[in-house]
Length: 596
Image (tube, rainbow, N blue to C red; front, side, top):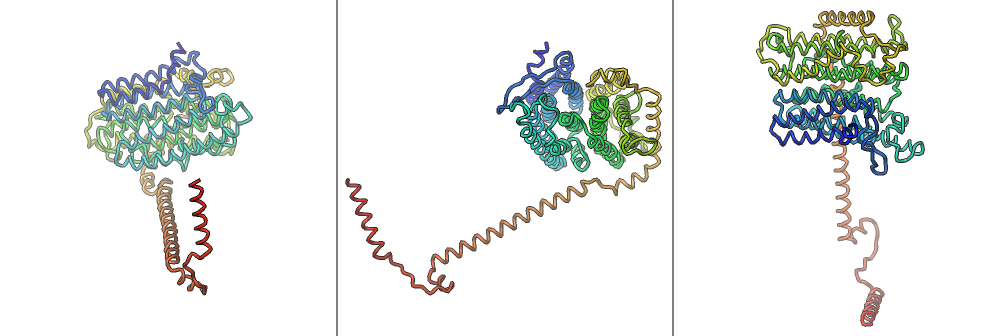
């Protein structure tokens, strides 16, 4: 059975389905797309029972490569990507998305799955670059403002991909002599990326993760495409980057943990200042990725529990983040309004969408009973073990950063829900979600509730399950201490929003993100560079033409040229007797040779 399941990697079927979506009628094409994504999910679930190993291994350019690597980490990613992609295809069909949206989205999912199941750095970098190209096309094809945003998106990911490629090359060169030459790029041959490639890999992957100052493509791009396209984009690039970050740095590092903590605060803060709902959600992608990276970074200090918390939060974030983008997308689809200040009172006319939003918001803000409460609790518990830079109550800086990020997250979703569903009287009377939109949202929302209540099922899917469930580590998410901490966080966030609502509104117009500086600076730097190169080329061209003119005039007027140079010489124009004699002699000799 397992040999049959591993005969064809799922990304091949997804690519075929993408072509079929364009060729078949809309209903049939989307049905086939849903089957392909559902197969990706089912395959990962079934392979969890004894299907691990390196499949479809071969050689490329003399190096060992593995096109279908199955282990506990890739299977976890395969399960959640396949499940969510199925929900997103149903949602796209119900949103009347053009067939090209679904087709490009499927190619994007295929490249994501290829990255996940890669067993070596060469295969991974190929699918990584393909993921950047396909996601850019998914943005571009919507036209309008999406084109400019997609161009900036492509530049960011092109730079990131180039840096990661450089890291892979440096890694390969550094591994020569340590392992057999053909195995230098295999994950199984090494533990992470070589130390000499650390900086290149960290920045290259960090761009896709949304590191602070490298994150501006996120809120710039994700609000631009079709609402169905945003659902796909919101969950795959950044979460795949977190997965690749673990492949590169399985030992973690405090630099990664603290960077994650600051991302949680930074993303939540700027989300509070937004009135475009998809832009608000995009900043929270950065914030939630921060929790994931904090968990992975604490691997060295805390161990497997922190890594499991990071991956559990990744898994849960794919579910609730896509759910929130779906709910917001329904509102935009029905109202054609993208400013939450122009919405309000929609809970009466869109009760299904409102309920779905509540589930997503409760999940991302870690309300007990929802999946985010479990995974965020694991990451915060891991940070509790770290006592570097102790602040109030004996807790360290990282713990406080994650707590502040949690408060900011709750304030953000109080704000989004308040303006979108309650603020003012209902001036719009849109219809609620379509049946297929509802189906997609119910799948994602149901999973959020299921894994929040039956959290053992979530932990069973994670790596290091035996360790997490052992008596030494035994995790009790619904202990009184966890519930008290959660209640304090939620109350602080609720009071904080309504207390700071007016100052936040004032600050929203006066607190630009770094792109307010970086984009103009990049533009003027590029324009200055082009002007400088153009002027330099023009100067070289003028000098060349002047030299050519002088040379031509000198050749035509040699006597005058020598006179101007101060040389008084008689110029002879004849060829001379000696030259004439030698020419005649050479001609006679050549004639004799020809006759001979």
